Amino acid sequence: MIDKRKFGNKLKTPSVVQIKHQILLRWLKDQKAAEAAEPQAAA
Image (cartoon, rainbow, N blue to C red; front, side, top):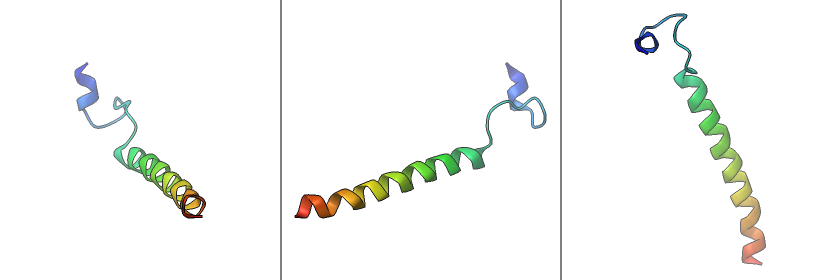
């Protein structure tokens, strides 16, 4: 559908800001999990 190319109410895809926010939250979650696992691996 060509309607998705238009800016306005017909744009159904989530905004780029929301996508970046979700990726950032997942990355931070992975970073915290990796930091929590490092001391156990070193010991």
